[in-house]
Amino acid sequence: MRETYLVTGGAGFIGSNFVLYMLEKYEDVRIINVDKLTYAGNIKNLDSVADDERHIFMQADICDADVICKIFQDYDIDYVVNFAAESHVDRSIRTPEVFAQTNVMGTVNLLNAAKASWGSSKRAFENRKFLQVSTDEVYGSLPLDDPECFFQESTPLDPRSPYSASKAAADLFVKSYGDTYGLPINITRCSNNYGPYQFPEKLIPLIINNAVHHRALPVYGDGLNVRDWLYVEDHCRAIDMVLRKGKIGEIYNIGGHNERNNLTIVRTIVRELETVLQDSEINDSLISYVEDRKGHDRRYGIDPKKIKTDLGWYPETSFEDGIVRTIAWYLSHEDWLESVTSGAYREYYSKMYEHHE
Ligand SMILES: Cc1cn([C@H]2C[C@H](O)[C@@H](COP(=O)(O)OP(=O)(O)O[C@H]3O[C@H](CO)[C@@H](O)[C@H](O)[C@H]3O)O2)c(=O)[nH]c1=O
Image (cartoon, rainbow, N blue to C red; front, side, top):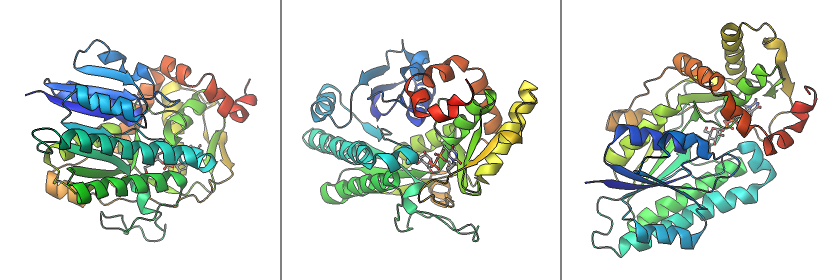
């Protein structure tokens, strides 16, 4: 029988990768894709499925109760996968309220709609699930001097940025709907993703975009902050597994033990671009140390033992392969990069552009 998914934020980076992954993998699925198309969402990400009748796109805000309730009335939703979120830590430092609204209130709105609609249907919560896509940032920051220390699902929440505070709050609402109303939920907490369609405000695509244009490569602080990088397709596969096999009520950490400091990431990209483009102007002299992010978390390191042991998930793409594939994708999608970095983007990064025009 055909399964119906309500995917929110399905025109964003991870969401659109997930939509494409599911439509490719399963014949018999229907995806209702709700995305507000903010600056970071792009309908072009879904060009390849524009004529696929299994994919129904709706431009809407997850905070809009009427629209979300109507979707639940019109479609018998089996799974909700909530990707929709404001996701950039730097922006959250400037406008925390935007993050509280979308990430917290939007999630509560979705939970209410699922509870009301599923609760009043004949099969109620049977074979249904609400999956909240969350982040390792809810656990806070690890020290650099203890590399064997990792976040486990039982690690106390200690969000330190407005972004991670909003994600932690949303996670707790999701958990509370499981505990209070018996809503079938899972929460996944993933490390830093990279791959196709990532908006170039995030480290990897921003560095690629700047380097190909010979612009400065901004490194915050001393560049030694560590992130654990996962190729986006591995994240999508993990979410699919949690939807299918995850035990109701459980939290699953997702990460591939690919920890690298930011300077290493930047230098890896520079080396690869220099080689592929045979362009000697792309070199480490483009690196520019800039003011540190306020409250900059030092290290994220996630322990994925539970999802590996319980569900049999493992990452298939090594960082070495993934970064080469990602760079090749951006180089062959110049139009996409150009379209997302015009207008408002240029305005936002005007300082970065002004020295180069
Ligand atoms: C944009 C930018 C970032 N950085 C640094 C800050 C971080 O230590 C690291 C990665 O930064 P970002 O790409 O913004 O990602 P980060 O803050 O780690 O958060 C990402 O990863 C999280 C998962 O850990 C997700 O929940 C977030 O939505 C996602 O944005 O690179 C720079 O040094 N220079 C830059 O220009």
